[in-house]
Length: 133
Image 1 (spheres, rainbow, N blue to C red):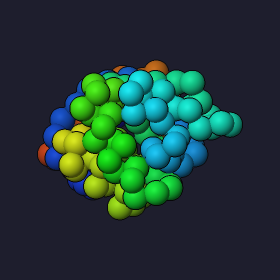
Image 2 (image 1 turned 135 degrees about the vertical axis):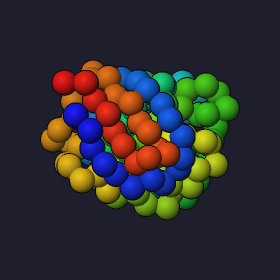
Image 3 (image 1 turned 90 degrees about the vertical axis):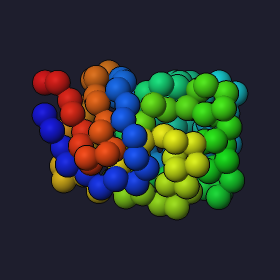
Image 4 (image 1 turned 60 degrees about the vertical axis):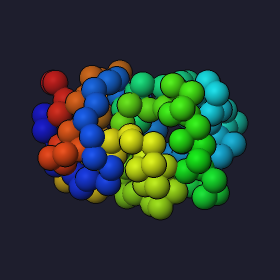
């Protein structure tokens, strides 16, 4: 399956999909030292985003979340790539300053088309999500 999307932060990555239908806040929601989601009640609570193709609708929370993403990158626990339905500034800036490939506005609803555990390749040069079916 190939899904076309808009490029936010250029690069390429491969990894296991980690999908959330809920927005994610990186400030207070994800531990920057471990990459583990710590927001109470979040569908991904207790799961690590490290090295994953993190798929979620959009970010939420403080602008400091951009720097949390950068800290995660420096600590080696950042997502391999990020895919949003609609990028907002906090996540976009975090991805750009951290060199994390990021796409948004996919032509297909990725929250329905993808599942956690799938292997995906993100080509944020050409604006493509590639998933083996």
